[in-house]
Amino acid sequence: MRNPFQEFQTVSFKKKNLPLSRIVRAKQDVMAHILEGYLNLVEAEAKDFVWLVEQSRVLKTYSEAVKYVQSLNYDQDDIEEFCGELDGSTKVPYVIEGPAGIYVSALVNQLSDDRVVLRLKDYQKKFHLLGYRLPVGKTLILQGDIGDFTGTGLAGGCLVVEGSAGNWCGAGMMQGEIRVAGTAGWKTGEWMKAGEIHVEGWIRGVGQNILGGRIYEQGKLVSPQHRGSQ
Image (tube, rainbow, N blue to C red; front, side, top):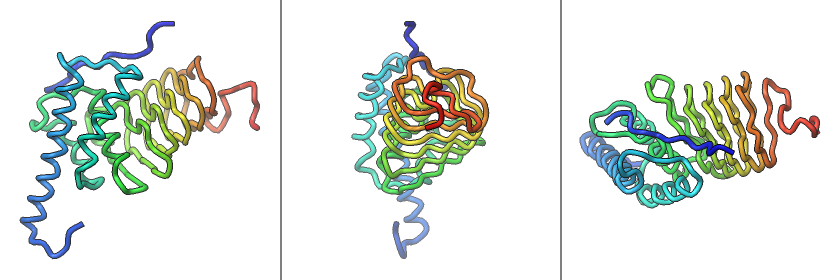
C-alpha cells in the first residue's frame, strides 16, 4: 500500500477593574507567548521546513505543543487571533501546515472551555489537522472550509465543520463524532476505530482501511455497508 501521508512544505514565511491599557498589554503578552511557543515548536520539529504527516511524528509534535501551551493563560479569542496571525501576519515568518494545525489543536484541547468556536471562513489559509485528539466532553465548531486531516485521532469530542473538509477527515479517530455541513474529500475515515462521521454533502471517497465506527453521507450509512442501519 502506498504511504498515504503527505508532505507539507513552507508556504510563506478573567480580570476585573483593570485599566484598558493594562488589559491590552496583558492580551499582547499572551499572544507573544503563544507565538513564541509555535516558533519554538517549528524550529524543533520541522527542520528544513519539511514535515511529514505520520503517526509517530504527529504524536511527538502534539506532545511538544502541549508542553508549550499548558502553562499559558489564554481564551478562545486568543486562539482565533493566533489563527489570524498564521493566516498572514508578519509576526509569523514561516508557516509549516502540519505543526501549525497541531499547535492550534493543542490550544483548543488544553483550554478549560467545553465549547470552542473558531471563525475561519474569511481566512485565505485552509488549516490542516484541526481537531486532532479532541477529547471527551469538548465541542469544537469550525466555521468555514477546512483542510486535510480534520479530526484525526479524535478522542471522544464532537467536531462540527460548518463548511467542507479536505482529505483524510476523521482518519484514525478513536471515538466521538464529526459533523460536516459541506463535502468531505478522499480517504474519509481511513483507519478510524470507532465513532461516527456525518457528512451532509457528498463524500469524494471513503477510506479503504476502516476498523470500526460508522460513516454517513447525506443521512445514509455508507460504512460499514454490511451492517445495515443497526
